[in-house]
Image (cartoon, rainbow, N blue to C red):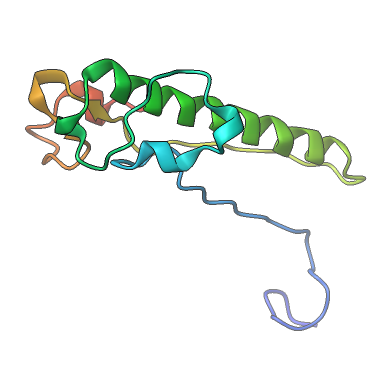
Amino acid sequence: MERGSLSGPPAAGTVVVLHQMGNHGPAYFKRTPADMKPYQPECRSQVLQDCPAQDIVNAYDNAVRYTDHFLAQTVRWLKTQKRPSAMLYVSDHGESLGEKGLYLHGMPYMMAPSEQTHVP
């Protein structure tokens, strides 16, 4: 079998890629199940400017906590594998939660505040 072929068993191992929605806004409240929302009250609107700042942070923090739970489950699963395994988790950007009146992460890089460009 030719290496890289789509038929037959993998020649050199397996790579699994998980891409989660994570903390991409503005609907942070949709990123967590109801039983995993310890930070309340949370903003339940996609129009972040309509919510108090702390409610936006609570919704964001609930999503961070759920991501932590998801990653812990992934690590537990990896530990059950019989072959050597590894996990690499990366974030592609930060997020503005109302600092300087900005939300999300869409500013051009040269103008964006560090909240958007710093990878947490």
